[in-house]
Length: 238
Image 1 (cartoon, rainbow, N blue to C red):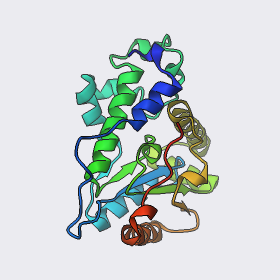
Image 2 (image 1 turned 135 degrees about the horizontal axis):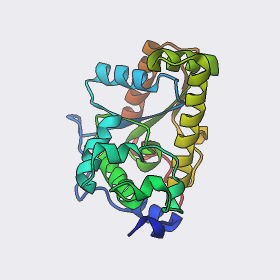
Image 3 (image 1 turned 90 degrees about the vertical axis):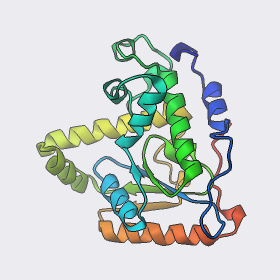
């Protein structure tokens, strides 16, 4: 299937497809191994919090690391994927833009590999996945977290990390937020900022990284101990 044949129904069919032929892996206690997904506003310290959670749990954290397996599956390069990764997905309906025309990986191949990679990680569990629609891809044995922050704090964080002026940092944040939201809207038909998609929404302007990590881990343990019927997130709409 080429990018020009992408449709909402084909994407939802892909989301409903089985990720693997084996059941989710289990812990020593016999319970399914959980995954944590982290959605974040640009500059809200999403990666920092995810890294701290991973460090405390001893779990791997997947952010840009997801691109390696996707590159292998699509026969492309990291350079090709970086042009598509969490970017605006107007190419889902219009693949004649220079961005996709000059890339060696089709939008469909990228999206299919992305969903397959995230699903496979969800089957294995015991990992933290940052962004890339993972909140909407995984629906069972998963804790979904959204991190937000006040714009001045986000601007300071991005300006420091990327060595930008405050004005350029704010422009970068606005562009990144828009691209991530558009990515999820076009790929999954949902609003990335809707709090109903998440189990936890934490404000890093009000809570330090250590406290956010502690709250996330405490919630994880509570969900792991909950009855089976309470462990599944709401399924993606058909």
